[in-house]
Image 1: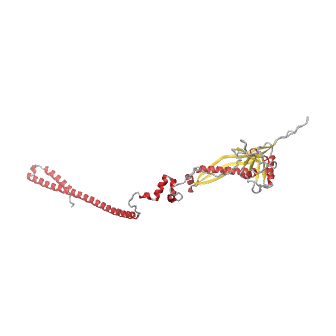
Image 2: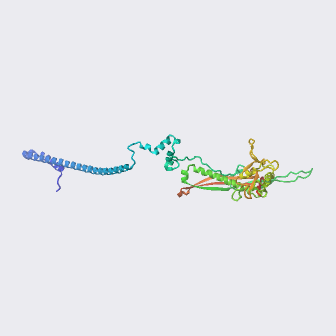
Image 3: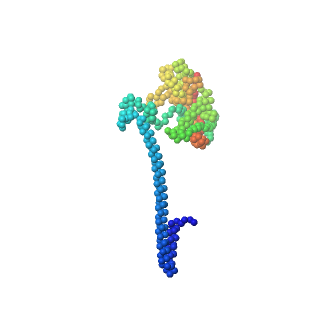
Length: 425
């Protein structure tokens, strides 16, 4: 049978005492009743002592557990203390290896690095040569990292030579795929007749010129990292650079394009080529060919009809050659600088336009000089403005973005007789 706990014994005694007290006196002798109660009191006292002993044992067990935890913590602290002592000994050993400064806490001020830095901060130009040798900007580890360079916020750009044909020619913007232009080639001639004679009949003549703009395209791939981390607004820069590329390409096309999937250049037009004149050889400026070339430059001006407003077109190096030419009579330079107010530089009294797409006259045979009226004789046709397509998906796994830029335009010689070309002999 299981042993009763003090709480259970106490509960039984209390119940028994209650039962004895309720018995009527007549049924139980008074002495017997008192003895029973006295015995119960004695057992209750013993039970109370047993209960207190149990509580004391429980408290003692908790105290023992707490002391055991403290002993474990002290053991851990003792181990950490040993470790710290070992580390302190190691640090003391390292400190013992450092050069002694005789206990002077300000000894670091005698070090050359401190003296050099102090002198430089007070007056950079007053440092001694020895101090300058200690700290210098041309050696990274000696202070070069402390003197960073400054980055210019303006992007410097080399010049791209662009032919100024668009500012000279007639420009037409269309909204359809092609443009048809009617060109009058002849007029009715009015004749004189005698009295009662029949008048001659005549009509104007026309021809139709059809112009189809071609697509001019460039694809510029760039990484997402470049767009994010570039020092400039790289998207704006690449669009600006592409715009210069378009201008350079169309300028060359307007001057020397073949007309096949590109503009028809003036120097490639069959009629202009058929009427071309020869201007002499300028391989050496100091030869008898000078006079022939100078005369040819003057003679070309008389081959256009009166009414055109012509100008010379040639390369800059050709201009440098022409500046050395004199007329054969008075020895005057053909090139006259515009020194009188708003008058511009002229050649034989006519303006000139530097045209990079034309090869310089002092190179191989085939180089040309042009004299003509661009506004009357050449038409530029634009289909649309600049179109930009940003492709972030084709090479998304490489974080490469493609910018595709389109234009549709072309150029055509509408009146060939407005131009006269001269070729190097």
